[in-house]
Image 1 (cartoon, one colour):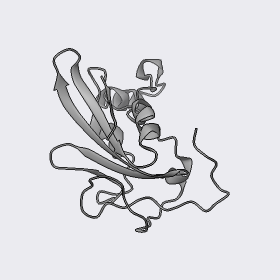
Image 2 (cartoon, rainbow, N blue to C red):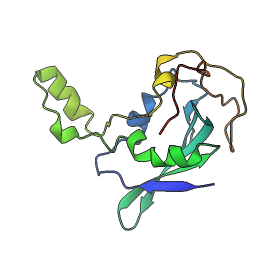
Image 3 (cartoon, one colour):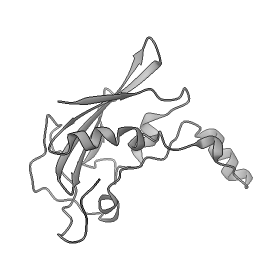
Length: 156
């Protein structure tokens, strides 16, 4: 099972960043466990993937977030991990022009914008219980709805 780690900035808020990927609190494809671990299943054009994301202290960087992946697109999911965690988001470049937006930006300073690289997953709100979920997952985990052929090209 391949894995990859990322050292977030000091003000980073993992739950707030990943929470936007859930459709609802009981979303079977993206959930936070009681120990803080996140489990996310995705259906990529090349097959399903399960990603386990853990947040733990590190003596050198102060903190590491580690993703472990299973399935035919495990390497792709790990290559995308920093983007999924919001590493490409630059909050210092954001200049709010309204006082309410500025206050929200200060209040939620650790929020980063997650990028999945899977547009259809965001566009299709339904869920599909079909297909095996790769790797060790929590009970009830499901993959997102399968896109119809011809709608999605291969992920690069």
